Structures are given as C-alpha cells and as structure tokens.
Image (cartoon, rainbow over the protein chains, first blue to last red):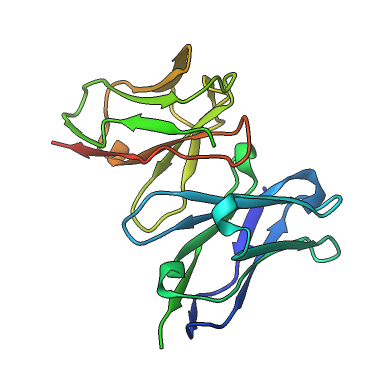
Length: 114
Length: 107
C-alpha cells in the first residue's frame, strides 16, 4: 500500500523559510509526479506545483513561483516543499499528493506568527 | 489559467436523496477531471478520475459524467457519511486548478 507521510506541524516567524517533507512508502517515488496543495483555514484547495522526481523537472502555479521550491531525493523516496519569505498569508495546511493516482499525505499545518 | 466554476457552493439534502454537483471548465479539458471528497481535518479523498472512472474502494453511488465542458458528480442514495465538501480539479493543463468546493449537509 502506498503511503505519503508528511513532516510535523511548524510554527515559524514572518520573513523566514520552512521546508516540509513528504516521504513515500510502498512504491518508488519516481513512479509519480509529486504535487503540493495549499489549504488555508476554512478555505478551498490551491495547487502549488509538482515535481517529477525522475528528472527534477518542476511546474508551478504563477502565484507560487517566488514562494515555493519543490525538490526530491530519490535515495530517501522523499519530496520537499520549501516556502520562503513567510507571511501570515502562508498560514495553511499543505498537502502532498500523487495527483490522479489518489494518494495524499495527512497534511502539515504551517502557522506563521511572531 | 483554466477556471473551474463549481456549483452550488452548498446544499442540504436528506438521507436517500440524489444530489448533483457541477463544474464548468472555462475551456475544453478533454475529460481530465477529478472529483474529491474532503471531511473536516482530513485529506481529500479521490472519488472519480478521468471524469467518470470510479476510484477503487469508492461506493458505486458516486458517479461522474460530462457534457462538453460541464462536468457533474452525482451521489445517489445519500448516506450520513457523505456529509463533506466536494472539489473538482482539472489536470489537463498547468496550473492544475480546483473548483471552489461544494459543502454538502445532510438534513
């Protein structure tokens, strides 16, 4: 069974960065494009971008191009989302997912507060 | 970007009823559409992929269809566990965009 295990909740200061992890088990990460999705409290879903761990190629939604960086480590079967220059607008739950294969991580809450 | 206009924003229905949720794509997405169910505090769960294919393990009372750029999710014989928020997402072109969501309440 494929499972996506995300790192724990983060409380971070405005202006700093945070790096979230998403570890794939039950299959090799190179079998999937890894997508990340943002959900602000009580709001809908926003697609941030995706990475192909096979060749590290990435696609981002325009609004996240200067905010998010996606990387992957095939040796550890893990994808990463780095968020930079954090503001209160970045307070949200972030999910990783394999897209149309239907596997999702449990989500990680990022709270940006001084 | 492809816009996904989802309706209604919310609806209330009774056990055993049938409800339909719709998503209108701003351009042709060639059936590259998924439907998700999300319950509070949980990750979204894939229900339907490729507009009408039922994901493994999803009850057959869920079905998807399309007509042009209009996509529909139908839930038959509503059960209490169907109370949730439902989202559509197109995966035809980047950025992959979601509908705004439909909150389904059971009376």
